[in-house]
Image (cartoon, rainbow, N blue to C red):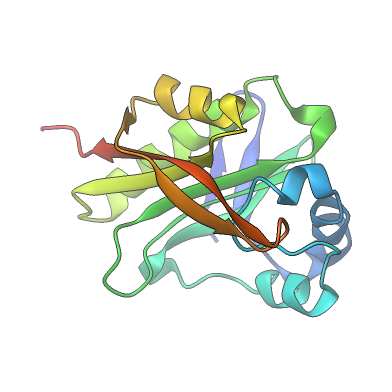
Length: 169
């Protein structure tokens, strides 16, 4: 199983034993309202489904651990013919500590080395400036915004759209 290890964090693919900790994470409305696909209140069946290991042929999706404790989830994956998409969420006590930037940098490096993707996309709701700041620190360029749906919000909201081009060799 692939493990990404940074100075402070470890990321690995999800597994069924992550259910309780991941369910706790996605039960926080302030966390999931910044995501597109997680509902609120949390859905145990969806959480259980997402605890299954992600197909490595399509990218890497998993949990982020600090000293062995699940503090977030992150993924960089490609669905069908779409461009690969980066997404992440962290428990509120771990916001503002640089964890998203640190692990996303390792995940992006892993994916550039593993896949032949020419571009990575990422979105951040307009009312989530911290996430947009992370993406800019990672070198993403902001494109024209759009509207994006959030299951937890039950509605669409303004979305900031970003892309990162593969570095030239």
